[in-house]
Length: 315
Image 1 (cartoon, rainbow, N blue to C red):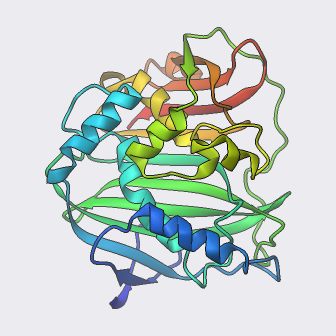
Image 2 (cartoon, rainbow, N blue to C red; image 1 turned 180 degrees about the vertical axis):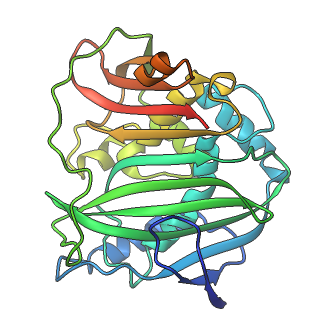
Image 3 (cartoon, rainbow, N blue to C red; image 1 turned 60 degrees about the horizontal axis):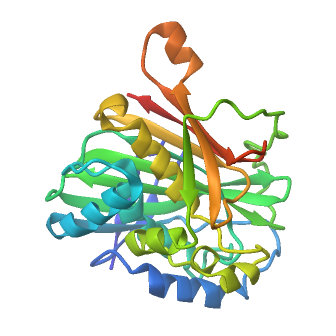
């Protein structure tokens, strides 16, 4: 059913959206099928206009998520805890954001969307057993040199308190931004030299299938060499959020604190199997001010070919 318009909380979002209440969080498998089927009809034809609608699911009971959380923690290297890390909250909310992207009036095709970056904030610890409200919407269509980029916003609330907010930025190639939408984050890549690594990840060919099992994201570019080749990759590629969440886990809950901001920007994909060198170190501003904050980077082992970079900053 459709509720009255409700004001949302993200700075810069339109003043009000129509809020559609769903009975439960959707399953990614069915959403991907819808998205793939609907992508063929979504071609560049004028400026992109996003639907002003948010999806919301109330009373999401996390009591039954213990086994799922444990599997996630084992795979990513998070210590056993009843506190849900930001990567798990992303997994929890991602199907609702995907449901927005497969709407008939969403102008961009799910097929071929490029994941550029993420910013997430944990504003209050979320614990296993708490009842949550999850909501998601799209905003911020703006120019990119190869098309248009858009933000998918996901929020998790405990009661009326905003606990988690995630912004996932995607690129749709060939599309046109609305008039007056200035380019954002489209500067040329800077020169980069790999730092000294602090870890080396040896990722097997099954890494994509393993993360797909805990995230629900069974996109064939991650789980099958044949599926990846159909999209122009020589073999399967790791989920970007797997690499970012693993780096978050290596920073660890003690150093990141109860509340923190976690960012990641993606460059070249990680081919599977593959070896990734990783550097996690204090941020320069953290050293100069005596506060805590971390930067992380990952690159192809033995090469100056960067896969990702990000930050973890206590709030």
